[in-house]
Length: 167
Image 1 (tube, helix red, strand yellow):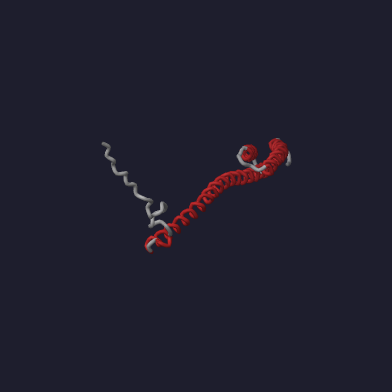
Image 2: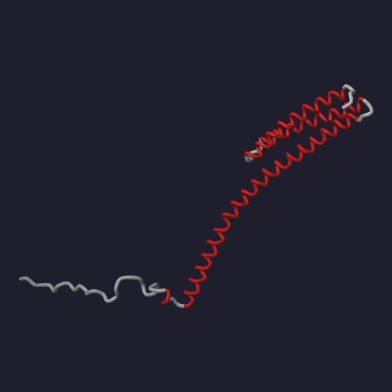
């Protein structure tokens, strides 16, 4: 005896085609509130990307400007001090030449020697600064050579003044 069982029931193809749900099918189908939220969100995203895009170069520029200003101000300070020391060295020679007594002459000659030595120290410090352009390095080397010639001549004058000879 064989009883035959009815064949299994398989439903046929569904009427809804597979794909996106009805809610996300098209932006046109979104309710007005969602369209407004989406537009505002997109504008905020664009604004955030724009701000981030501007802050990155601004930060880099600020860092480079700070490094440049630090280096330039250090160099400028040294150059101004070199100029002042050179002036004071010449002033020391002039005052020593016109001093009325030996103690005054010695004090002014010591003042000259101290300032002449400081010009050399500060020129060396300037040359030791990092980031000098080749043109500035060459100018500083020329200034060092000129300073050596002037200091040698100043030393000769100082020796003559110390001996009591006319400068």
